[in-house]
Image 1: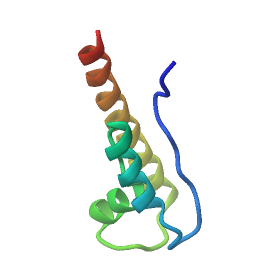
Image 2: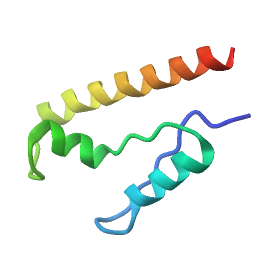
Image 3: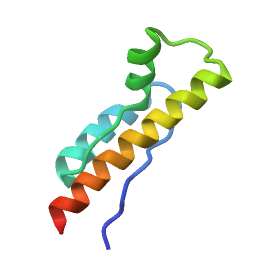
Image 4: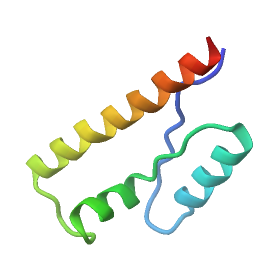
Amino acid sequence: MRANFIIITGTNGVGKSTMGQNLSEVLHIPFIDVDRYYKNKFGSYRQYTQSEIAQASKELEALRQGIFSKQSKLCA
């Protein structure tokens, strides 16, 4: 059975983005860099409000759902 997604966690500067890119290439799976997503959405790293986090989380979930629904159609 193939995993639907992989979550990589860690502190700043430990290589999460690099590992995610590498896994994406090796396993041929999509990669969503949450740090980059937040930076593109809000313009800089800072303390985010609860409402900003909630909205971004909904958008990321929709993005994830979209990616995996497309993949399941390709595999069918």
